[in-house]
Image 1: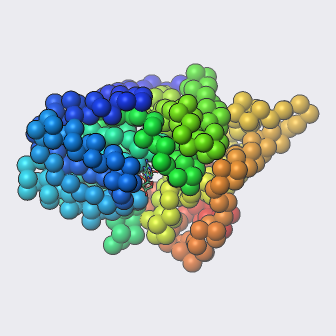
Image 2: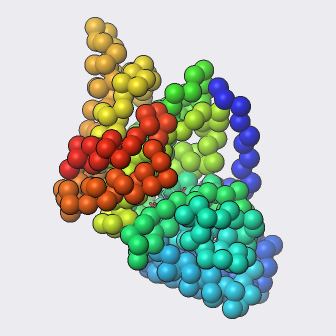
Image 3: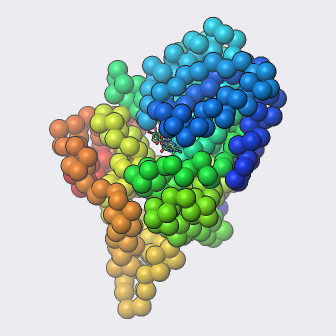
Length: 388
Ligand SMILES: NC(=O)c1ccc[n+]([C@@H]2O[C@H](COP(=O)([O-])OP(=O)(O)OC[C@H]3O[C@@H](n4cnc5c(N)ncnc54)[C@H](O)[C@@H]3O)[C@@H](O)[C@H]2O)c1
């Protein structure tokens, strides 16, 4: 296990009915709020009315940026920063999934920064401060509700880039699983894949002697697998929705389940290049790419893949080589993704081979990616080709 320094400053208010605490929580951070939300589900479900009523009851003036895109755009973030500055906004509130929350994080760190917010995403600057941010989560997937990461797409340059900072952690996040009852099946699938791959990025590590962390990762994976199909079969299954929500948060809350382990994260970089150009959902891209990354790298530490197969997928190792067990676990992963409705090929989502060179070059813009196996441009291009 490596030495580590772990801190997570986000308060979580979890459970049915916690939405009612929003007004009280928000009032602690000022009297002018910028409310950010996505495409309109919050208006259809009545959540918008509930949120704005709670804010107004506390005398909070509400400015708004709605319509934050899935794969949130830099242009929207810049617009929200201008509105915040022009109106002296003191607090940012995101209501939605990862897209609304990530956009709000970029606004929170962008408002006090004198340069252009994109500087953070191209490693030109580090955030030194932020406006306080609160979130109401409506989709279990990213973990952004309890971490300091934000992923933004610069559509003019076809670049999707992530940035992380301690300043970008929400002050609080309200996690009421009943708010996810309206999430459609395809987004439940995307969210399920997203949280599982977050765990994979941490679990497939070369760091030795991490038994507790490995078991925590395996527990999150098993809990996701046990609950995803129930949530798909019955979208208002509280137990399934609550378990998925907690799994999504634990899967990526600043690395709690994998402290002292070196993560990989190559597949996320490889996927970002696809959704940065083709605008496909992140979870869909990961469902296609991740099993192929696994096939490409498993020989680097075959016993970790065999352990994954046995402990998570209950593959019976009797009479099999480690390699056979490892491959059975990779196949079980692929089969599960297919069972919950995820595509298995880029061609199914309109992605051909025409941009493979561009995407591979961009994925390694700052050097080789990954740590389980370091991948250069040719490796990345091969994983794209395996995914066609
Ligand atoms: N910051 C991080 O740590 C992190 C991690 C992984 C991914 N991401 C990024 O997050 C983004 C994806 O976020 P996401 O997966 O949460 O999806 P999303 O926020 O893009 O939402 C997907 C769709 O679901 C709809 N939706 C959300 N809640 C709903 C509800 N309760 N009922 C009905 N519809 C609802 C949205 O309007 C949208 O159309 C991507 O840009 C991805 O790259 C961020």
